Image 1: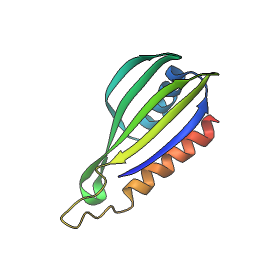
Image 2: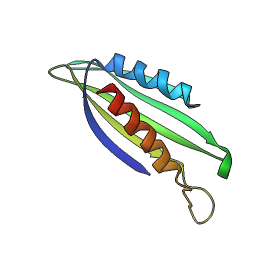
Image 3: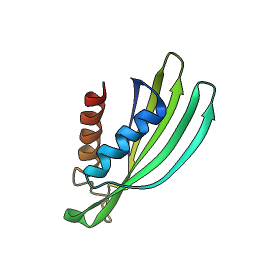
Image 4: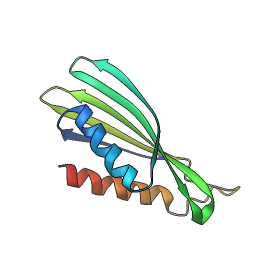
Length: 109
């Protein structure tokens, strides 16, 4: 499991829509989204899945988008399920997903 936390400027619903649009283009399927009310606005917990042919597995990408004061958003990124087989070999899937997220985050900034 790999994880990362970033702080972005903007509205949490706009950040969610940005990730939804760009991850769908990259063959991620959004499986579920939950909406929560926080002090500074709405927050989201959403899960994306992606199938990888090279090792016949599905990895999940969980995003927790939490609004902060001053029009900022905390995004917690968790990648799981990228390890497969008895030896829990990752085949660089977790790293690949994080690289995709890093690219999207840089474009959003």
